[in-house]
Length: 331
Image (cartoon, rainbow, N blue to C red; front, top):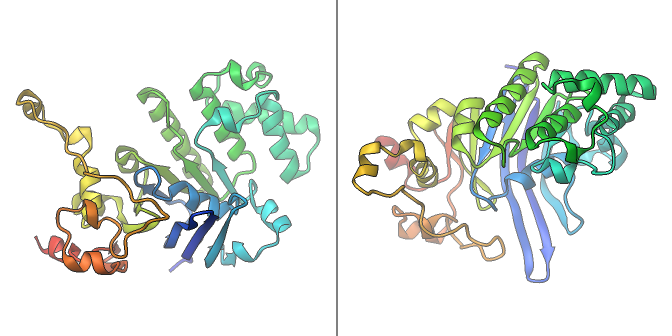
């Protein structure tokens, strides 16, 4: 059995605030092999982005990774010096951030921004770096790349700026790509193009991808494995087909049932409403003592509010953190 490219082991990322310690990522363990895409899903505030920033070691100043290990190709990233980690970022591990307009420098041409990443890690001349930038823009589907390489970010559409971000991320052919909501604020047609582009680049480079999203439709289309996060914890993880066919955590079931695609036209004609999950994600400073989903769960029992369930393998490759999941599996 081949060793996973990435292994996240019991990682806890915390922030010190005036009100106390906030647990943004709480005892998360995941693994990913080369050529695989892992979808990480959940509502806003569940810790998805902070998990990616933990892997990149780009935690804001008031935060720290308090426990755990992040093994990349067998080496713990948390044990590297800052200089060694800078070498890894961009060259081996790259990230596409959520909003390209705030991630790109507005006063630099896009070609110069891509070229800077190439020069930093590959030590080539300015001319060669710019030539590679043109080639990369062509690879990500930007027309007339020789001309567009001289554009500023504001001269491009949202979809084009996202392609520039992908070109920057792919400039050094990384082995792991972290894509944080890469299709947010894009129309459906452009979303599909961006997802296909990431998939094509993954296949071409045998790259591992962590795809962070709140959209289960994107996960179903683009990922092989999925991890569902809630209030800083992973509550369910499985292969995509298995999870969609038999979701065993009440939160996962709620996410799937609240998708518009599951709403029959006949229901609309009867005046029915889309299903929703009542309540909101608990604040990470005021977490309940038991299962963090208990107050929103119609199946919660007394034990659910007393202690937090551990993530356990209920079926082959299907891990769930829920006391009632076993009975759901038998139903």
